[in-house]
Image 1 (cartoon, rainbow, N blue to C red):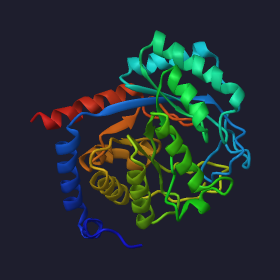
Image 2: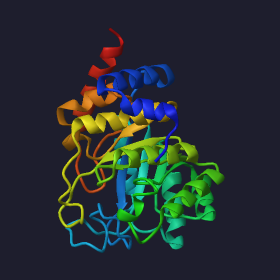
Image 3: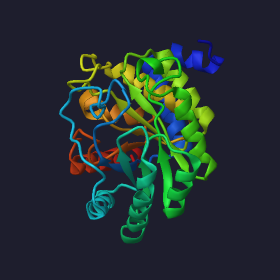
Length: 306
């Protein structure tokens, strides 16, 4: 692949210099603050799609929980807890190719209730939806739609074959067309190369996304990617730094896998340009205790004040 010269220059840099430049851009463009978001697995399992990393796919034999859309009171309690632990955004996530049309009004009612009773900003990750459905959700109070690209256009067919990269781009375009903010990123460690990661970053830049969550593959039993070796810490830090330089104005959030892959180097990820993270766990995997993350953020804030 051929990149703009500045990207080629960044690729050639030793990791310490790359991180130094990424941190300078982060502090200049984004400041020292760390933003937090939280999600709930609102509907789980039996997904028709064959994403090769996902335990919720019906194509694979896994122990992922299976249940229909959760009750609104349970959702509201989770939203209140997300606000308590410091999240500014709370996302409703459902399994499946796309939320059925019959369930859109139910989701819209949940969004209204959360906005009225909790006051937290509400996001949603509901798969492939059309403009009409997205407009209905926005009218109910949805502020942001989450729809990951997962990987590069070139590598995507090795990740999923039941829908296309172009369908994901179309969903992002539909969300933006109705005035929603868009949160979109992907997963590192699927078997992609650095060139694939850069390609995805450029696609996200072209889409004009408002937030970029970066997941690190958790190889889960039963999925075709269960035997993937984790990326090295250095490779992850390089990727984060490159994303900060390519997307200087956009929040870069660490999501699933940060605990198991980065381990003791979580702080280094923020020195490489990350400025947000998901708190309170993931779809089918538990994360660190929120109290641990809050202590980490407080200590990180102390770095910038010295």
